[in-house]
Amino acid sequence: MTEMSAEQEPSSGGLAEALQGFSAEFAACWRRLPNKGLFLAPLAAWLVLFHFWGSSTFGYVDTPSLFGWMRNAYAGQDSPDSHGLLVPVVVLGLFWWKREELLRGPLRTWWPGLLLLAAALALHLVGYVVQQARLSIVALFLGIYALMGLAWGPRWLRAGFFPYFLLAFCVPMGSLAEPISFPLRLLVTQIVAGLSQGLFGFDVIRDGTQLTNAAQHYQYEVAAACSGVRSLIATVAIALIYGFTTFPQWWQRLVLVASAFPLAVLGNVVRMMTIVIAAEAGGQSAGSYVHEGGPLGLLSLLPYVPAIAGLLVLGRWLERPPAGRASVPGDVPA
Image (cartoon, rainbow, N blue to C red; front, top):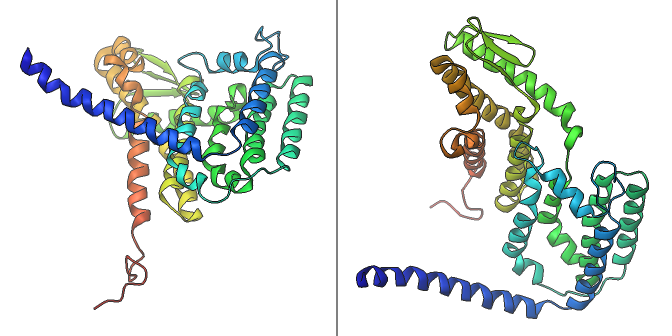
């Protein structure tokens, strides 16, 4: 037991040192940040406003808090908007990653930020009156962005635009996703049926968004929750983060974001094909087991595997210099 304790000490000591290092770095950055009171006091008032007078849709969610409305929209394992709880954490992490760029240069009070704050307040009033909480969510984040500009100036806003823009993924899509989800459902169903019949030789019948086999051993419908919208949103977000943190050119970033759409479809096709193969082998119960995520729910992550792998492969290709061009600009061949 003494030996185990001795072995455990370095790992626990390493964690403690890492936490101490983070605390010291955070404290140093906090000291370098001016006008903290000018940001924090209005921020508290802004958040109170959206907590007590943030939502007027009492017939749908019985709370005046916009944060309560958002929590209800993100709730549920099958909700296409469940990622909304994770996005602010990712944004804060990216802000910490860009801390030197944000703190570099003069940080000053910028009074035009009040105009941007007034625009955010007007947008919230419109959303409150017409009972469109999504407009109020945009106003909430726009107001916080304005307060950062007020306290630290336009250079901070330019440096922080990305990753702050990622907070757009916090706006719940809900029924607005239907124009995207239904075509995705049809496309995934058509591809899975074609692969099942042409490649695997399964007697799969497609009826709209439903898949069955001739013997009626199983029947599945590519429902809205399985349409791939959630994996599409996640893949687009990953592509944005990967593109903006790795590539300096806009065309490289656009290529990555554009690839998110076919990669998300590919991931969902792989997942549906896994369900069909399991159903062909073991019937409805086996397919349902895979559909529910399999062991420890790991198979629910299957759509993200080809998407992330595809982004990484594409990223490696984008990093290659053009043929006939030196890999490091300015190098002169010997």
